[in-house]
Amino acid sequence: MLVKNPKFEISAVSPKQYPKNNLPEIVLVGKSNVGKSSFINTMINRKSLARTSSEPGKTRQINFYNIDDVFYFVDLPGYGFSKMSKKEQEQVGNFIEEYLFNRKQISLIIFLIDIRHSPTENDKLMYNYIISSKLPFIILANKADKIAITKVNDTVKALQKELNPIGDIPTFPFSSERKIYKDDIWKYIDEII
Image (cartoon, rainbow, N blue to C red):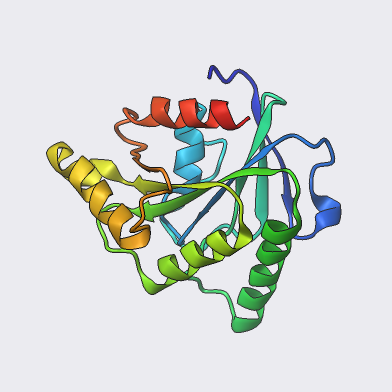
């Protein structure tokens, strides 16, 4: 897909703030600092539409990125690390749950995990949470540039086997640095939207 005019549209914490135009939504979930914002920037060939940070826990609202009035990338706050207070974490958890379980426009969830590490307890909790939402999703083994290219496919298979032993959830490698995997993801997104 050739993206011509992507734009950040809104940060939201409640349904009344969500976009009203009924475009399909591709939702990014994953732990803090797993590379959700970098994924968006890589997919749309922009350096900084989605703000990235080396400091985990920067995204604290649901960010909607309008991709050429065709669909949205929706960046959810990361989990597993944050300088937020317990009260803030609870508030963020509540609006994420409200969004995931009630938003009719969600077409696909992209669940990002770090290819270099076994899934954490939080990753497994999120995986089960996504399964319980009954929404279609894929697993993205991100930061594939951080391991030898010859090990990528085997590592992806091992991650899939650990999270999804029956193998019914598509699992792809991804790297914002190498950009060699993004065509596979675009092909999948095109079929969904």
